[in-house]
Image (cartoon, rainbow, N blue to C red):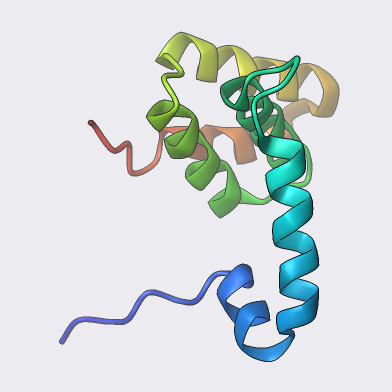
Length: 105
């Protein structure tokens, strides 16, 4: 028996709070679009933040998203290092989730 994937927060908000979901989605699009910083760099920055906040599954998802945007393993490793520098061992533990479920393209 296959277990269904849990819904992510955006799907839950789409279903239960569509107006809030739209606000968040619009803000995300506005912030994450290419600008002075590339979307790849912004995604690596989000990976650092999720490491600092101990959001392990977020780190995994963001690392895979960064890879899809062209981030190298060296760039991901440097991002995990920055998280460690700013947040210590707990950030490194959460950051190590960047290496879970690596999706090769």
